[in-house]
Amino acid sequence: MNMFYFSFIFMFISGLIIFCLSYKHLLLTLFSLEYLVLSLYLMFFVFLLWVGCELFFVLIFLVFSVCEGALGLGVLVNMIRSYGNDLLSSLSILSW
Image (cartoon, rainbow, N blue to C red):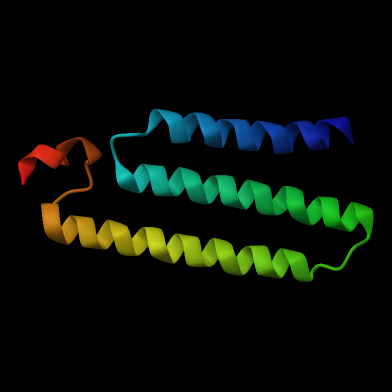
């Protein structure tokens, strides 16, 4: 069972490392955020099964994570239509 928890922690830490290292592309950042949300979802689901609580909390968490993904995709599409790419390094406040 210890190895089971270690795999959850490894998933979360690897997602955080990818999130910190992919700061130039918005699409890679969104993918790593979705990976973090899925790893948190899995940990939350297993914890609620272990405690014996209702699983409606998992459904609410899943609804909020889908809303977060749709919002991120909308920002990505808007940025690609405005600037032509998803590179965060091409954005500048001084370009106005």
